[in-house]
Length: 335
Image (cartoon, rainbow, N blue to C red; front, side, top):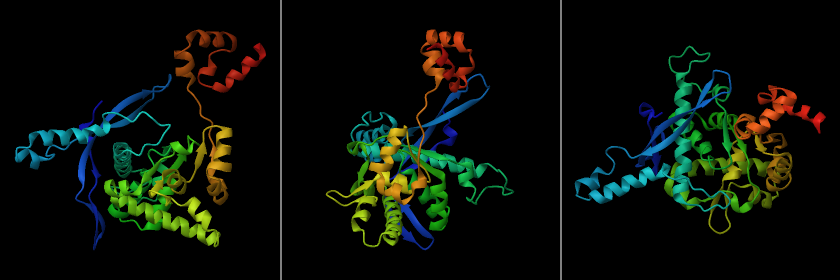
């Protein structure tokens, strides 16, 4: 269902202003994120989770200026432009295109979700006597965010922005909490599919985030420089910013640096990730890299999709396998 009471403002464009009280991101264009909740029922266990997705809505006063000077058509077109963010998802993942609308989509879902997570965290009073939670030390104990490929990578600088600019945490504290919160799943080893956003585009769309990414990179490279003082090529290979040709941000590198765990989705894939694709990073922090073999749900892909086979298996080994897939090893005796 739709939950209009939880509608959230998402900011784009604008500029960064340094004030006495800290950094502010101002003169932005606002799009509203309207939450849609889809129930996900558990299997025979009286549990229902919700998956919260977001729809883009133009604010009510959107481009009233155009409207007032009689440019009704422009006002409507601009409104459509704002709402296009969630209208259609880019289908192609095999090749990185670098489209502005795609980056808007990625930031939109990330910013809305993080605002929602922080709202819930502040409202939940686990082990605290405060009326509203203001300390974030226990944030990583309550919140785990899995970056499914690099598409939600902007969550890293976005969470840092919230901690630094809104919650006024010092950098070291904000960074410690952020890295403990995020983990990253890599899905592709094809260089042409890896996201590399042009710096110029990020500067236009998300100027504060670019500053934060630069600062993350600076500290990251300082660490490498201290460990490998004369290895300039290593710095180039491991930088979050690629300098050749059009300056770009390597989103996979941002995910690795901003997460406490990185995984591939099959044994051979995880080995390639460690030995080839992110070799330098695996050398630096081997404990960060692990494998999580992708699973499927037997309830959907066996019980629902192939009832005949599901029935046959149940006849042979009983119905326990539906909740415990390891039971399928019992089929060996029928081979």
